[in-house]
Length: 50
Image (spheres, rainbow, N blue to C red):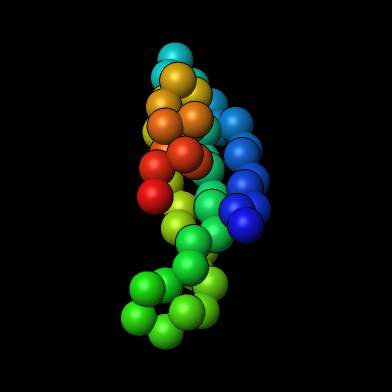
């Protein structure tokens, strides 16, 4: 069960994307959000990575 949100950001000539995914903590079992800013090409790798 993964929820994802992707927002496009533009800073000067670089195009960046902020990706947010929900992951389950192995210690407590609670869900937490992991955020990262990257290029649009790397978003699918980030979302699919465990």
